[in-house]
Image (cartoon, rainbow, N blue to C red; front, side, top):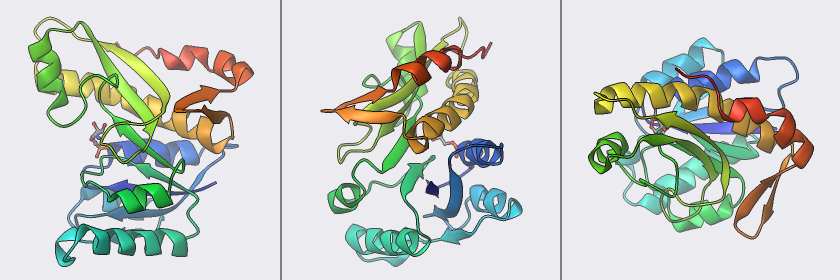
Length: 215
Ligand code: GRF
């Protein structure tokens, strides 16, 4: 399956997907990486791996819809079948999201539906929860909403700062996104209403990966 990856910055999740796609038998290939920020380090990661990488600067467009139309055009020209948002920090218009309905994934650094939005780790620490984690879900127009494909739980440790917690969750993200993309691109995920159901045999075989050792 041809995948397009949307980024805005560092690109560490992008790197984990590039590495996964390079493993034999992996059911996805990255056709294009797009950043809305031309200075995003992730663009260099893509280019170093020989993957076409494009900056489409949102500041050059008068409206959100005009920017989204350009994104759409580039993705379709590259033959993209599935979009993965990987640290893409731009809200997409409802029209774009609906045009790619069930064909766009996002990773969020919390156990959704808890802690949607920004400053996640700060809010997790303020709330005093003992377990956090990360989620890959199918994108819907409302931010950080949509059918959950895969999650990993990550412990909050005494003395954690937002930074130490973010690092621990990020390590889990790097395992989770490649797994979730493998499940979706491999055709093992179907929707029942707004719930994503993973093919039973596959879910069982992958079970140890759902709680990776991230200590
Ligand atoms: C990740 O924590 C991701 O969950 C969030 O933004 C961060 C992006 O990091 N949406 P990177 O650019 O993939 O390194």
